[in-house]
Length: 284
Image (cartoon, rainbow, N blue to C red; front, top):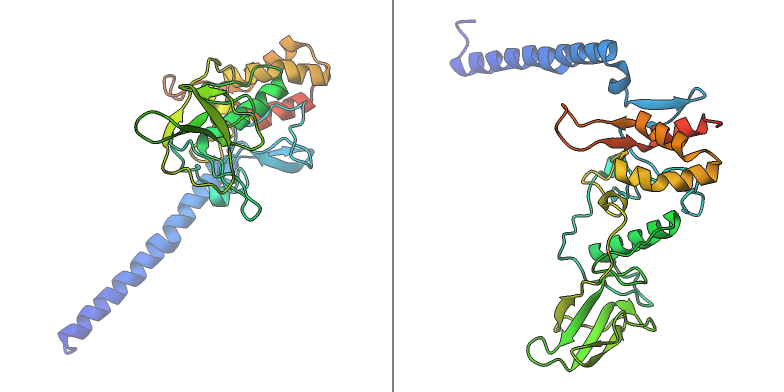
């Protein structure tokens, strides 16, 4: 071996190191970690799956929809937090919407394009729908009564207004305000360019009843929990649909509420799938 050139000896040493590290880190270590996880944390290591009648119905770590074939909420179930992950709660496409609080202008649909809802309009639409489902006000500041962002475009951008458009309300919708600074407000015309105008979000007098997690998606889009406030808001509907006493439904909410992490981090939360399964097993 000593007679081999130095460059060959160097390559052989590197090859031996590669083989040893491959065995240690590419085989032995993963096998040990997997074995410990399966032996000590079997449920969590396999996805925290929840079974019903011997069949996996979901994961305690991933949210899911409780809707019918048409996508309408099923009244007897608690509803999950909205999701922006793929088509909803898709673990292979976990993400947020990447839209920020300044995203307030919709692209109105035309005959050739579907259009795009701003983050503000998404929140307004979700709030309106959830309010109708729960029988409470779905109104929120900066939202119109028909569930879009209350935003005006004012022309010219500087100086006395001569034209004002409610850009998120497509014609023939009636604008949420009749006039702005003495100028009649027009409905938005799909395909018209309003970029030159000044953007004016209008804060209405509505007070939000629905909690934030009822109308906004989580950062991962997979959150299986809702706030205790949102669960309490849904409880009367679920009790009515199932013919259960409201105190019994609230008792089940309490049984499926997790506390703050380490006793001080975050807020109490309710696992929606576990709660709905518990309700399915309750007869009175």
